[in-house]
Image (cartoon, rainbow, N blue to C red):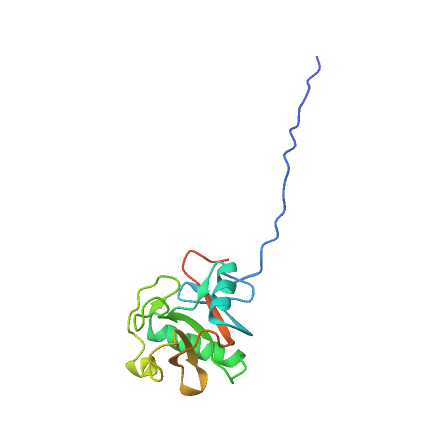
Length: 160
């Protein structure tokens, strides 16, 4: 009596995983469940947001004083300190109605001093927000066509 054994070979794909550091892909830093990456290359605000979206993220949104301090301190260490980064806050749709690109609610945990430079020079034309390294991380709205470094954030559940 002969027993025939049949083997079914299924294709097996090996997909190398990115090196993960504390739940984030290589090159990203984790803080309070979100992942962050800074780019020193200079882009317009729109190009920077597109770059972030290609990485399944958005320009950084900041929802607490702790997050403000993290972004300010961590990326200040690695950035060329001449220019602060674009952040995801803008009032492109309606003047003086600032919104985050990732849809996060605009809460006001950062001190009013941090927000003091928004809409401080021109009534229009300054629709995109930058964090100013040399002014202790204060935010300022500037023309969106400036070429500046930028920081991306991937929110909870969107880790690499």
